[in-house]
Image (cartoon, rainbow, N blue to C red; front, top):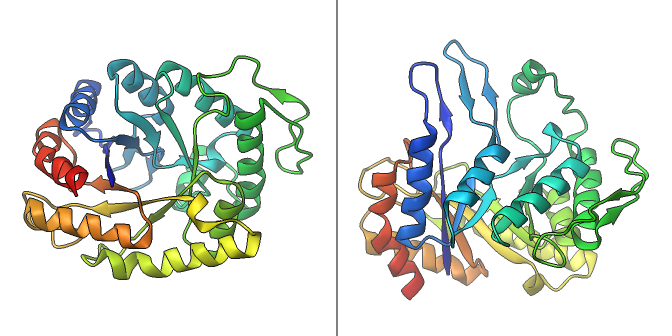
Length: 294
């Protein structure tokens, strides 16, 4: 079982998250033995005290240049933000900067509509956009070119002449919970990512229905379910009682993570509320070792 960590890049005017802290967190994650580091791709939460996040593509490039082993990805790239041809170019570039360590996570977009409105982004018809976008991105990364006809994202000969170290580009991970997105993942993605918003401490109960839906989607499109790598996001409250997610001792949390292997899950990405820090990430080194040993 592999284990990843999510960094929190959100902040407010009076409590920003500085680059020095994020760089220290990335290096702490690498030193602790984490396999993967992911960044959020949200930008803005309208509120009385607005919350924003640092732009994730710039951060990913900086973190790639500041580390040497850990894989780097997004949780997840918000499809409505960017044209898919640009997303493919971004993924190709980040894979080059990282020396083949980048993982492209994609999601249809689940932030509040007020965010898209405030940023001037058209997020209508999200599923239709996701279908076109994932098709274009996977074509460009795997073949170097896309001629998708649209209608939302026509790409008349979009080309990646310079290619990253991997001939077919970085793996594409699609975050999916609903039936249509699960089927899209089964059709086009290299990996599937599931997430549980309930904060359940019983990972098997939380993820079993999703995995069953994924297996059914693979059957519908004629894909061997074992050919689609499975990853999930969990909340980890190690060292502090947060009242949700996987809490308790290092061994308790490791056992819960390892049990997810019964569902064919091969990587778990950890979120550590209320905010990630280099110190809290370093404290998880025994958990990383226990999961790897399991």
